[in-house]
Picture (cartoon, rainbow, N blue to C red):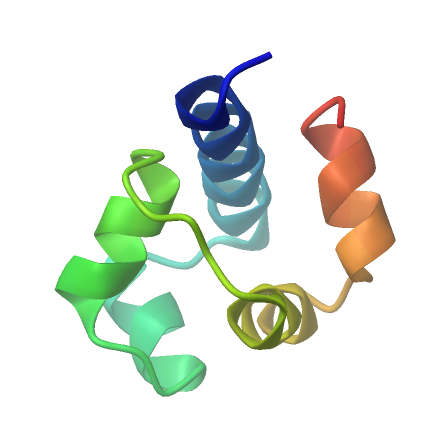
Length: 74
């Protein structure tokens, strides 16, 4: 699996969890202290995120990084 596919799978999992939590991109990005445009690019699979960013997103979703990776099938 190439890097772009990994990023897209992860981004899709993030989007699915965010929607399930009832947050818009704006409110969620604000809640985790991230710019909405940057967060949006994560969900679209355009960013190769760091572990620190993954942690912020996972904590904002009230899940573990491992759960997020599992959701993405990684």
